[in-house]
Length: 214
Ligand code: 13P
Image 1 (cartoon, protein in one colour):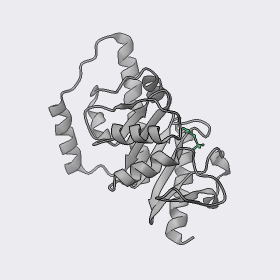
Image 2 (spheres, helix red, strand yellow):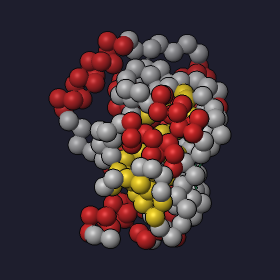
Image 3 (cartoon, helix red, strand yellow):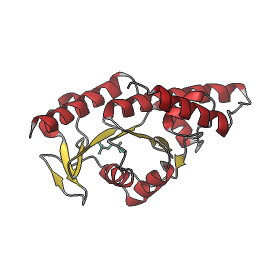
C-alpha cells in the first residue's frame, strides 16, 4: 500500500466516524467509497467504524473482484456502478439519515424549498424506487435517480451523495439531510412554496463562480 492509498483509506475511516458523530448515520448502516486506480476503495461490510484500520478497507476492481481481508460493503454494486457511470465523481457516501430516510419511506422527493438544493445539482432530489439492498436493480435505480444530480434518496432505505472529493461529498450529504429536515418541518405546517427551476439554475451558476471551498 503506497502513501496515496493509505491516505485514502484513512480518509474513508475518518469520514465514517464523522458521519456517525454528526448524526448523519448510525451503527454500520452507511458505507463509503473513493475511486482508486482501476477501481475503488470501499468500507467492509458490517464492521463497526471505531474498529476500522486502513487495512480493513477493501479494494474493488471495476469487474467486482474484491481484494482485502474482509468482504466489501453489501452495497458495493451501486458504489461501483455510480463511479463507472459518473467519471467526474471521486467519492460515494451512503447513509440512512433520519429525515432523508423518513421522506424516502414516504416516497417524497425533495423539491426546491431552499436555494441550497443547488448543492445537490438541480431543482429536485429524486427518490430511487425500492429494490432490495445490494441488488443490481437497486444499483440501476440509484444511477438513474442520480442522473444530472449529486444526491438522491432510496425508497424505504436512505440516501446517496456523490462528489468530486470525499470531503465535498460528506458536506453535500449533510446539506441534503438539512434540506430534508427543513422539508419535514414545512410539511407539518402546510403548503410549501417551491423555488422555480430558473431560480435554482441561477444559484447553480453562482455557486460555480463562487467555488465552494469544501
Ligand atoms: P454494509 O455494512 O454491508 O455496508 O451495509 C449497510 C447498508 O447500508 C445496507 O444498505
